[in-house]
View 1 (cartoon, rainbow, N blue to C red):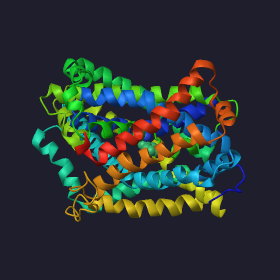
View 2 (cartoon, rainbow, N blue to C red):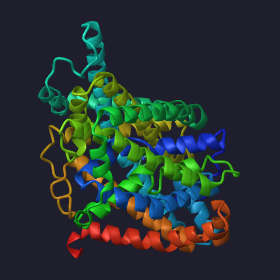
View 3 (tube, rainbow, N blue to C red):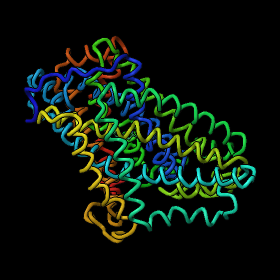
Length: 476
Ligand code: PHE
C-alpha cells in the first residue's frame, strides 16, 4: 500500500486559529451558497433542512473529528496517514482504502467545482458591468442590469451555457488561481488565502443577510426553511441528498480534513476544533438560505429551480430589489472567496500525496494535477452544450437521466463520500487502537463516550442504511 514509509511532512499551520480558519474555509464554499439552497429548494425545504442538521450533528461532526485525527496522528498525506494509523494499530494497511476513495472522489469533485466557480466569475463580470454601467450612465443603483427585463437577465445563464469556449475559459481561470495558491504552500499559500478571504466572506455574508431581511420576504423564507413536511421527508432521495450534502459541506469523505489535520500541531484540541468547524459551516449554510430565499420569495419566484437557482433566479431577483445591483455584485464576490478556500483544499489532497509519494516539488505537482483537473473538468463544462445528451451511467439507479456534470456530482456526493465515511467510521470505531484514538480526540468523560458511540454505532449503521436506500429507493 502506498506511502507506508513516508516521513512526516513537517509543514504546520502557524497557529490553532490558522487551522480552524483554513478548515472552515475548506468547509464553507459553493456547498453552502449554491448546493445547499439548491438541494433545500428541490427537496421541500424544511424536511431537508431538518435531516441535514441532524446528520451534521450526529454523523458528520463525529466523522470530522475522526478524519482530522487520522491526519494529525499521521502528519503525512491522506493515504499515508491512514496507513500509518492502521500499522500502529496492528491492522491491515488496506484500511487506507478510505483515503484512496477519498482522493479519487475529492479530485473528481474539484473538476466540476471549478466549472461552477467559473459561473461565479461570469456573474461577477455581468454584475460589475451593470453596476459601473449604471454609475456612468447616471442611473441610480436601483436595480441590477439596468434597462434589462427579468427575462433578459434569466437568459444570461443559458447564454453562458451555450458558449463552450467561454465556459471552459472561466473554468481555466479558476483552476489557475487555485493551482497558484496551492503551489505557494501550506503557510504561504493556503493559510494566507484563508486568513484574508474568510473574514471578508463573513463580513459580506452578514451584510447581505441583513439586506435580505430588511428588503425581502424574510417570513416566507423562515417558514420554508424551518417548517418540516414529514410526508415530503420520506420521499425517496431526501435522506440521501441530506446526508450527501452534510458530507459535501463539511468537506468529509477521506480527504480535505485528513490533509488539513496533518498540519495541525499536537496541542490543538481536535474535539473542540471539529465542533467549531461544523458549527460555523452549518450556520453559514442556514444564513445563506436566509439571505437567498427572502429575495427569491419577495419577487414571487419558485425555490425549486435546481442548480440554476443561484445563477438564474437570484440575479433576476436582485434586479427587482432596491440597491440590488451592488448587493448582487457583492454576493458573487463572496461566493468566489468561499469557492477558492474550498478548491485549494480539494487540490491539496492529491498534491500532498504526489509530493510525498514521488518526491515531486510542490510547484510541479500542483501544475500537473491542475492541468489534469482542468482537462477532466472540460467534460462537465461540455455536458451543458456539446455533450448535453450524453448519459454516462444510466445503469446506476437514480442516474438514468444524469449528464456528465450531474453524474460526477451525484456519484461523488451521494456514493463515494459516504462510502469513504462508512469505512472511516468502522476503522476508527472498531479497528484502530483505542488508546491512540482517544488520546488524539482531546475529549474525555461523557463527551468521549458519546463520540465513541456515535462513531462506532450510529455513523456506520446510519450511513450504510442511507446508502442502501439511496440506491434502492423502492425499499422505503
Ligand atoms: N465543503 C466544500 C463546500 O462546501 C466543498 C468540498 C468538498 C471541499 C469536499 C473539500 C472536500 O463548498
